[in-house]
Image (tube, rainbow over all chains, first blue to last red; front, side, top):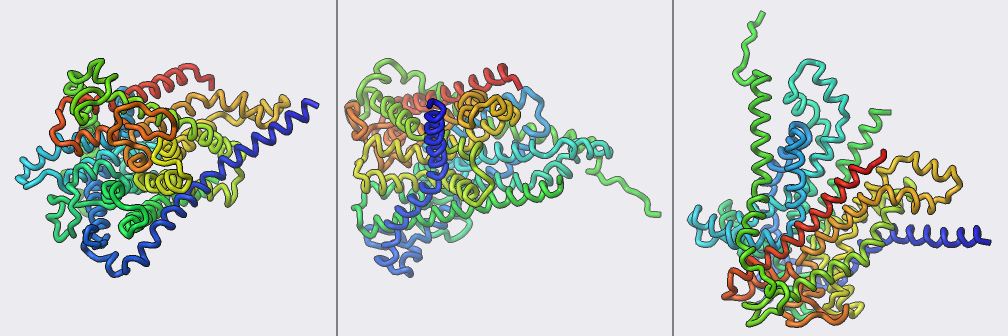
Length: 299
Length: 290
């Protein structure tokens, strides 16, 4: 009798666990559905030519999202220039060189940075970084793409460090000992053997870091000045810009539900969703392809 | 025979020395801003913190008084997120680690989790607005905001939990089943207890992220100013991160002291969560039997 009862309860629990696993697929589909359902009407209400034009001025019904897309790209590229070298080099140091005590200091600090809310960085950006940059570079305002890039770089660093570090730690110890046995230095081993072996993992880390910067909202909204202008030259880095995320966050609260403006904001969310989806899928493909290759080598 | 000429920069020993020093400098420079931020905020925020600031309602358009409703709001949102995200996330991780076969469906689930992890927080906000606030008619409320935050937190909890479960040696499972335990009994009595520290770490890290988020709650549950505490899950609420955004950008003439006080309280929240994680980890490392 009781064995039977045990069986039914076990079956129920197993079913519940199974459904929880499947639910993740459901959530992605639901997110996609709600974004598309509200975003697609934008395509019929605003002609495609106007949607991809260069002027964003919703009060007069100019819904050109190009300046916003380019704004996001400018900040993302800027942030990558900061975060990729710092993040990868820090990971190499932690994984390959750092003595135990240095690891114990660096790793918790990187984790702390990962947990720091983006409003806190935005707040410090307004109060410290932007006045500093304004005075140091003699700019009319400190709220620029550069300020945003520097802070977003800090946000991307923990992602890049922790995933690159994992990739480096996953390189089999025999690779290193084999290389050292050939008489080269530890430094040469790092650059000639370990890093090439961990290449795909480091690439994944960089992609995921970039994915985080594209989607970051509060920091860029607070420090980039929010001016939806088309980047004309490289000087754009010293000028205020506006990203897709900041546009949604700052304007959604004020639009009437169901208006064209509302639909266009959801359309921007669809564009953002696609951007990050592509980045993330590519990132995961890079690492899984490499895994298959190394499994083949080992077997 | 060509005479070998030693290039200037090809002294491997010297290169190693210079390189090691350079990397050390880079690594510590990378984390230096974090130390500076923490010290700076504590230094300037501490004078603003007193009993009244923590436990009083805001007054004079938030320019005076305290931040109690925001503290309580963030507490409620964190608990609410945990209620939904923890059981679902842990169960999904158990499925992936213990049940899922190596097939297309599992690959699809993994793809979905990668996707969820990458979706920008403000996009979660729009989704929450569309599904919970409008379609399910929960309104801008603690419930809508918690549900939105919990879907956002799921990937963190799932991936850390799965990693913790997979770290439990396979032999533990084999022995348990050979003693006659069913699969679920094995998971409950053997695998989960062993993986508990790792799972708790994941939960705290996930909730820490949820507590600090602003963009997902902007349109789903955060109130600009609410001089009372929420009464039910269907009330909107103030929250610390949003309050920091409001006092630092939306209200002119805001005393700087209140801004620094708010940022310090928010940062303490994060520091305490990080401390909990560190404690769990070091205790688990000390007690590990395998």
